[in-house]
Amino acid sequence: MVIEHQGRLWRAVKIQHTQPGKGGAYLQVELKDIRIGSKLNERFRSSESVERVRLEQRKFQFLFAADDMYTFMDDETYDQIAIAGEDVGEEQIPFLQEGMAVMIESYEGEPLGVALPDHAVFEVVEADAVVKGQTASSSYKPAVLDNGVRVLVPPHIEAGTRIVVNTQDRTYVERAKD
Image: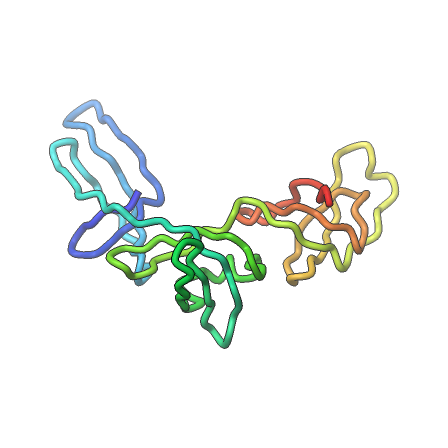
């Protein structure tokens, strides 16, 4: 949820509803500034109202990266926009693949963030050897993907295998079906 508070746009990161024995109920909300990235803890009483901001979400296709700018193309109008790496998100940049469909959130025409698909397919370029005797419990071994990200994979995955990775938490999902 994105709200307008103190003249800025904030994304609600954590929300905790509290109803103390004495006094009225309130929401303890951790807010993160969309543009700057600063955090704020705010307490909203049930009598207060906040203005929820409607973000426009459009489907774009990732084209290429040049310097620290990432170029995307609108699927409907074929217009291209360039977004700075800090707005894309440092943790998401390694998962961008040419031609990948993404959702870009914007407010009043200004792009605020890029949402990647939940899963993406990558090739394992380096996988450690299996340690014998660890088959009794579910064991995982470290592996390096073709984008340079390290993930934990099951013992049967070897270098050259294509796997599906969760882009949100960087975890192994399954072997790719292609």
